[in-house]
Length: 77
Image (cartoon, rainbow, N blue to C red):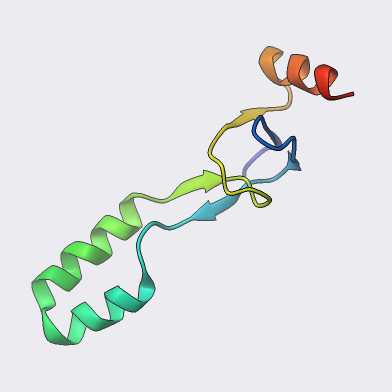
């Protein structure tokens, strides 16, 4: 369960979204044509997921209940 975070890039407060790197289109093309590269690409995509701001897609997220998060939230108000 992901707790609420604040984006220091745009000021969004809330839950982040999970982003998968790469392209599903490329993955679908690689599988039927080249099985080994398709497998490698799929494993790479699944292991490089990250949380990002749903508003600006930045990865500069900090917990709201952390000292830095509280300080940043106070500066926004």
